[in-house]
Amino acid sequence: MPASLFISDLHLAPERPATVALFLDFLGRQAREAESLYILGDLFDAWIGDDDDEPPYPAIRTALRDLTASGTRCAILPGNRDFLLGRRFLADTGCELLTDPTRIDLYGTPTLLMHGDLLCTDDRAYQRFRRVIRNPIVTRLFLWRRLERRRALAQDYRRRSMAAIAGKSLTIMDVNPDAVLEALRRQGARRLIHGHTHRPGDHALSLDGQPAHRLVLAEWREGQGEALLVSPGGWKRLALGTVPCAG
Image (cartoon, rainbow, N blue to C red):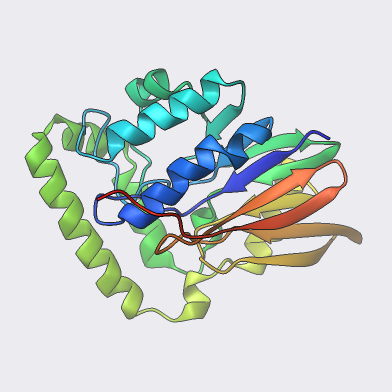
């Protein structure tokens, strides 16, 4: 039976070797049994440009290339941490880049794919920051900087982000229910799959008197992860356990 896998919020980084090892193992095993793998944002904790060859990024690119060469389609929808993924990365890996949002026909069900941050409309400060940081002029100026400077700026952004999150309520950082329904209505979809909030769950909705669903993907951490498997018969969550990491 055909099946597609969905993951998000891995936040891969040099300082997270156990999660990197788990992802590489996942690409070599479970992902190869699916016809498609969708990565819905924040594959990386911070992507500062396609020219960043710091380990483990070369190994991750190679593993993704091996996956797509094996016949599994891999599509990436950038998140708030890795929206600078570019043409070189796509050429190196054979992955496809999706826009946010993207509507697909998933085994007969119109399905909307998003990272999820656009749905957090109550966090107005973040939405303003998002518009600024994704301005093409701002991104171009950032990518013109030397790699070492970009790496330092990314570290500073992570510190500021953690401080900002600590000062916000959980409600503000979650999706707005009205924004969810409006996104589904606008795109003509009956199912939404997203990440970002780190609050995995399956939510039954009523959209204009008809049933709909919102499926939230889990964050990966400390070598523990989860993938959502969707087939013509429905969906289920696959728990991914810790695998040994080298070194």
